[in-house]
Image 1: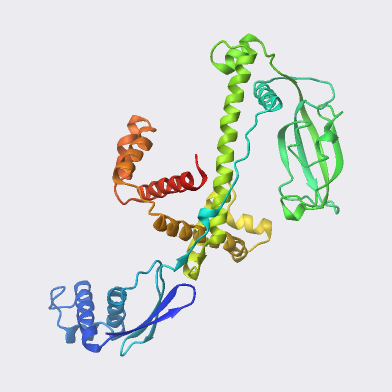
Image 2: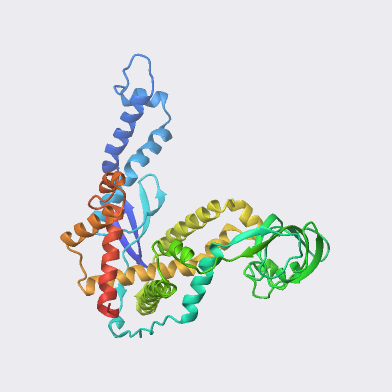
Amino acid sequence: MNITVKTLPKSEVKLTVEVTPEKLKKYYEKAAHQISEMVKIPGFRPGHVPLDVLKQHVKEENIESHMLDIAMPELYAEAIMKEKIQPISRPKVEILSAKPLKFEATVAVYPDVAISGYDKVDIKKAEVKVTEKDVDDVLADIRKRNAEFKEVERTAKEGDKVEIDFEGFDEGGAPLENTKSANHPLVIGEQSLVKGFEEELVGMKKDEKKAFKVTFPKDYFHKPFQGKKVEFKVEMKRVLEVTLPELNAEFLKKIAGTEKTIEEVKKIIEHNLEHDKEHQEKVRRENEFLEKIINLAKVEIPETLIEEEIDGMMDEFKSELENRGIPMDKYLEQTKKKVEDLRKDRRKEAEKRLTLRFGLQKIFEQEKMDVSQSELKKEIEHVIGLYPKNEQYKLQKEYKEGSYLVRRLENKMKMEKLFEKFLGK
């Protein structure tokens, strides 16, 4: 077997493999034997059909096709082992000739990664403050979640909860997709719908109908509606007066679990807010650090890896749509996009993800950031211990050595060590 290797841009190599007829003979015989086990030829037991007899009943091209199915994976594996190539993606194989057999295999290999300067990155920690307004806002939100609603016959005012039917129409009077809803609940003034809509509901009574126009903002998240003037037809179905609970001893006990004064409840809220803001600040600094790594890493990412990463992102997006009850074809129809457009939109993010992945692996290697077996075992036990007893046995099997979950956990622990070393606690 004659092998030549050519290094290509973007961390790919091309192997050209020529196979001698002598080497191919064993694969041909193996293919013929396997076919003889599957065909019924009078006078012969399956698997015991002489080759010359088999050829009278089976076309030569069928035997050769099956031979290639058997030979190609083994020949490719032999070639990369002989040339000490470590592929990180599936190969693209092209057969150049059948007799003698000659094929090309293009495969991505682990890229050369260079990264430095990450040890000089300085991301200042912002001071975490919890204001009295922050605490009051949380209390106000708790009261809203525990509000009582009473249907009233008067006209709607700001602060009321209402239920409405509505539908949007373009300037020509044609109904617009995704602008129709029935018994839609909202609190007037919370601006859950497009700006200018809720103000029109003030003064409406139950069963009253109204038409009004709203212009969508130029930066609206859904592009087809940016700057668009839409006429809405609305029917008021219900008007409910909102009564917020008083901050008395009974309510404070309900939200705190035990008897607490208003000052004690505020202290608990303040403590929880401080913890949340500390966590948010930690995540902000970690994300900024990771962005710096992306900018500092020098790596040529194989095209096949980028495509595979985009494949994964597309699968994630499809699952998100399905969870919202939107089929992919319906989404494409509504947004007037093609699958190719969605893939193109995700390309830059895919490249960033891969650059970060390779950059981090290089840093782990340079900093000798390893996780010992005892550390890993302790963390696995901790993770499994967070689950109910009846689920722990199943998880113990899933967290077996070398599994995806174990590798993911190990990488997470390396990341924590990285952040601790360069960002501190």
